[in-house]
Length: 159
Image 1 (tube, one colour):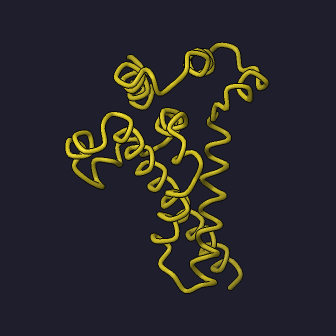
Image 2 (cartoon, helix red, strand yellow):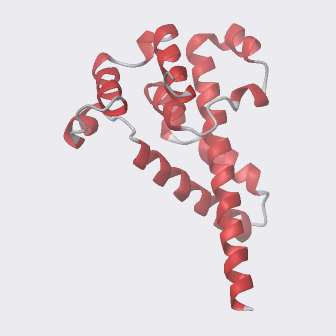
Image 3 (cartoon, helix red, strand yellow):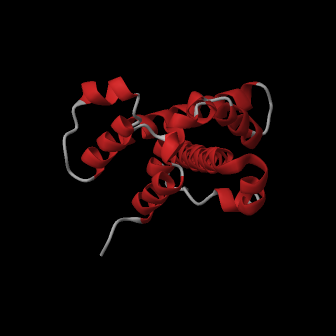
């Protein structure tokens, strides 16, 4: 059956961008995602983002974006883009492979622009950052829509 698409994407990212992920992070990724040790202290030492942390952060960003969009009468898409673009997981390239590894939208980069052009103008590290940012934006947008649907369901239940 093989590895799931996101796992294969991470494997390819490591193959093509080996200097972007240190050896300890890669070893921990393999151990955790392939059924090995999940020692939280070792994850903290390498600043590895685990799936639970990623999902919690995405949900938190979606909640914050909805609040900010309402309070300041702004488009939620603009708020999400600004929040993600300034997020430490996007600013620091060591996190990009983990974002892509946990994202439900790891292929979202192709929807935001010409990946060949990004590679040509920004290089391999820039491409991975572009893909991670697009994936995280798409994840937060989906979470915000899910929260909006939940709020509407609660409103209907109250009536």
